[in-house]
Image 1 (cartoon, rainbow, N blue to C red):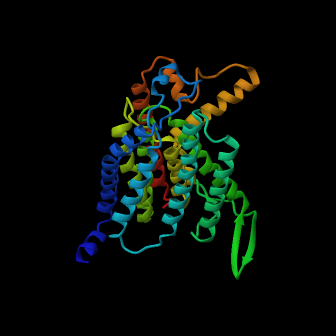
Image 2: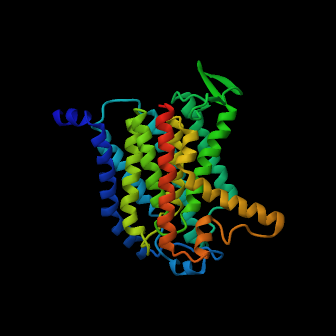
Image 3: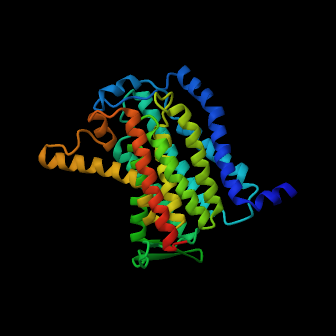
Length: 353
């Protein structure tokens, strides 16, 4: 009991401990998981329209995101028991959204393996499920998490997206449905989930960029005195560090949609609960840029039958220009770190917290 009390006085130590615990969990479990996947011949189905050099990755074990999510849970639970009692609602909501999107990703990965094709779930089905999760998360955050339906832009007055709301009386409880904020949260959560999924195209790219951006989100949560979410984000960082040991080029395993969709939702969820939705767009700018490259490529091709980039998402464009895979990955990590650092600096000096 005395040890618990002493540790509770050092939330910074607990946050770094969460990184270590999650990292160790992945390092210990991943070799067994990889062996299990190989025994059952559960491997990645490579896109036929992707770079030719990626065809050698066909059959590489996938769904490594399962172990990352397990490590996050272990890190939060083991380190969270020492933390002073607080409001667990933000942590519960972000965790549920992360798990739910992870389940979508798992089903998507499993369908790719079973059908032996790279497409997985139909885009419409995936988007419907992501819509349901983001809507449920938003409503729960507003009504039970006491989150205001506003968007805070640094150095500017908050934008009230609750002006168009419907309130329903449920057993004496006023249940608010902020329609504009609902749409915004959907765009944020579904957008980041799909964006991280698009980034997950090179060995170590998604894990490294998520590591960098979630480190900043951990700092934001810590600065906002939301230690539960700081532990959660720190555990994600630790899980990604451990995963990179096995996912670095040449990758022995991929995180799959199980990991990429879940981690994107986790990033967006923390942004909503810390009221840094606008800042998160800058912190996670590398994901935004990658997603925009696909939108621009598809839209421009439909209009002109020409391409803006040699290949989309953007990381494939640089591959086609002759950059090696490791060069693309490391330089994208650097760009992600620059944007994430700038985002935290603006958050810090704008006084959002």
